[in-house]
Image (cartoon, rainbow, N blue to C red; front, side):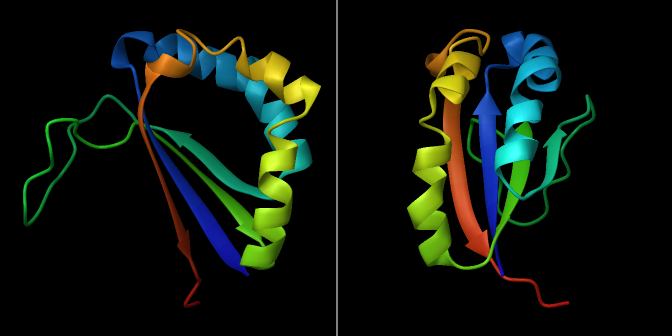
Length: 113
């Protein structure tokens, strides 16, 4: 198994609206179509940083993790699942549109447990 960890830096001014959109629209589709391990939004608490300082954008405020059997399956299925008319209609309702995503980071990990 591999884990796709998706971190988003979403416009903080629209963050509360984003959480409503995610709960009322996005999560139903994402949990049905993906092996979604979890979907998290930051609390209004300071980020703890140890070592080198963060860049000016700060830490991501949205994180979700998808489980895949392997990278080949992910590459074959991910874009198709986020290109359906249902998802495109759902995503069209994200507060502020695509430009509200200031940065997106995707990394792939394996479990050591």
